[in-house]
Length: 285
Image (cartoon, rainbow, N blue to C red; front, top):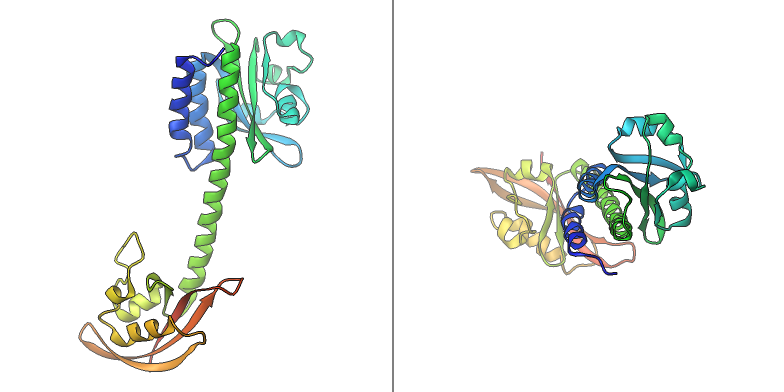
């Protein structure tokens, strides 16, 4: 039978938010809370599977995460471990008669499991976690409940991958920003004559916020129009393949005349493709 209106509404509600949250734990807690309430489950948890076969608790509902963290979950052990090992969804209506259910978690936290639905969390064909719900208050879970949990498990895998990508990009940007900020006064210009970055030293030297909080990179013709010699050097560098030798530029900065040494160099990627220029500024003593 196809999923019913209730399940589609639940799926829409969960997926509407799942890809907008950029923290794995926050995401897991939101999903658990919404799913457990809609499925009338007394408990639930989302687990992460590490490459060494250990399984950690990312979030829980009905039992504290701290209590579950004291239990040793492993691939191949118990219902969660079975799902992590086989990558298949599982519905257990009578745990006492199912050899995959071991009961250590119940004993440790004082819980009595009557029925279970669990599904793998899959990212790029890798099992990265398990989502599980326990004890439907009105009898056992339905086949449709298992199906919706399986769909959410697949979407969680995609969302977890997105979170990892966001963190990688944020870390890369932080690292790049640290390098650029540690340089002398400099500007980074792309091949479309847009100012990608002006480091703090450059803005102090010129006593201006060159990017003015713009969401998109501004054109150098607009932001450097008050400094014609720097604009001219930056534009010249766009068509040169070799570094531009240092030259003196006389600038008027807030009514004070300064002599600034300007030099430029091309920026290429690891394949040798040109994508921009570095403009270095140094105030003459």
